[in-house]
Length: 328
Image (cartoon, rainbow, N blue to C red; front, side):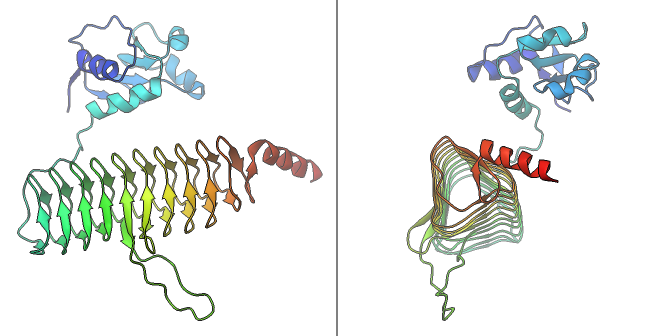
């Protein structure tokens, strides 16, 4: 069990430009971070959603990451750690308590198959039954799990984590990326001439920007000629399909079961809800939010929120839903 002092919590918050106010002693120890409902008097909790106000009033937590406007709801024995953004604070502090961080131990299992034309840098961990194919470069401090198939034509950047049962070919994975179990990156896309059904050969690759995370059992297809691109600091959930030639900007958030058809270009700071579908050859701007289960069939300008099928401005969609419900 990890024991984290308050001074460590304060430090990581302030390093990320969060102002912190609390009278908790620097050497006060917390054993874990938990929900406000299930916290004990040894735990740190956090609060950000008014739905859980009742739980906040009855929490047993020793202290709580909380915004100033809510502190009067805390029990007297629960000390507030006042911050401006409790959810960001949770994201930062949760990493202090994380016992499951994967880091390379520098050991390459004897039960691996590494091609002589691959390049393996320093402090690489490769677990049993993984294969590293030709023209592959794995840079420093990379962790590769069991039963992975890496290559050909792959570069994996520094400090990246490749979990078990992952297949990567024809791809460049930049530094500090995480690829979760069962993911397939760099395979041939769904492309053929419609009349004859003649398959179109793919010679491009996939490029994933730094500090990105790719969820379990997600598939990202290589481009026909150039690159399928995922921008930096992007978070893609499980069971997402990204087709060939798709370009997604930086800081994307894409929930589970989203499907993006080929050659669609998406801007920065996109948010896509679960089970949304996006047609091919579209252009979607920056700061766009696509609601869950939406069907996008047309281009979307920047700073729009859309919902429904076919996807439209969310306010228009809500009015349609109300009108249709009144007809029943």
